[in-house]
Image 1 (tube, rainbow, N blue to C red):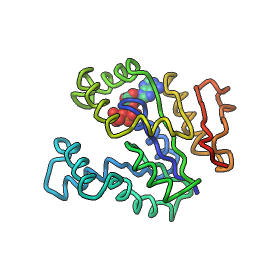
Image 2: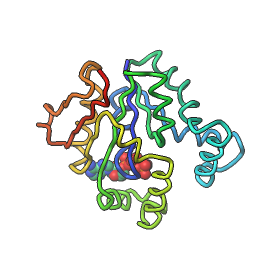
Image 3: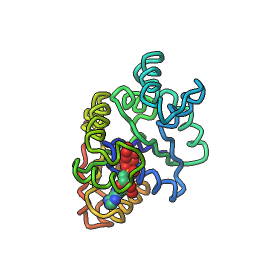
Image 4: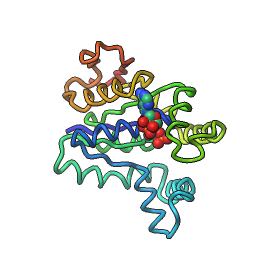
Length: 206
Ligand SMILES: Nc1ncnc2c1ncn2[C@@H]1O[C@H](COP(=O)(O)OP(=O)(O)OP(=O)(O)O)[C@@H](O)[C@H]1O
């Protein structure tokens, strides 16, 4: 059993990692979906109220609220799949909650690329205003860092550097999904010569 959590700043490649997982038949639990469904529950438009409801949930149910609400969705997927990907951790409270629930079976992957690279890719993606407007991107980034995302990234088990081609990134994610639990923390760069910029952190685990 393995639960892979992803963390990364806007445009780093979390969505791509999730789509690689889906293509490989690995179920994906998107933490943002928990917020979107709560918006609908409250009769609010998710596109406009996402940030506000995320804050409200944390205030009402505690800082790990979104992780807490994601857990049953992960459990359901684990009934039929050995590996599940959780898209988009934001805070250390959430990380602590997943570690508490899954222990060693939880592998945190930080997807990283410099601001300029992400800004460039996002302006090509153009999903919303913060994709094309660099100032809006900075604001979004600061908000996410404000939730403690930087600290979460620092605690990652695996860092995947996404500055190379999309195909190289996809290969790296596929390798991670296939990696055996016992290899956690080891460099699996053999499939790509280890050039994909993979670093690992032992975090004192055995
Ligand atoms: N290595 C790469 N080369 C080229 N384009 C890439 C690469 N990685 C990701 N992209 C593209 O960059 C854009 C941003 O990636 P993605 O949507 O996965 O980011 P994200 O981390 O999910 O961002 P957000 O948090 O804003 O949703 C997408 O259009 C994606 O296809």
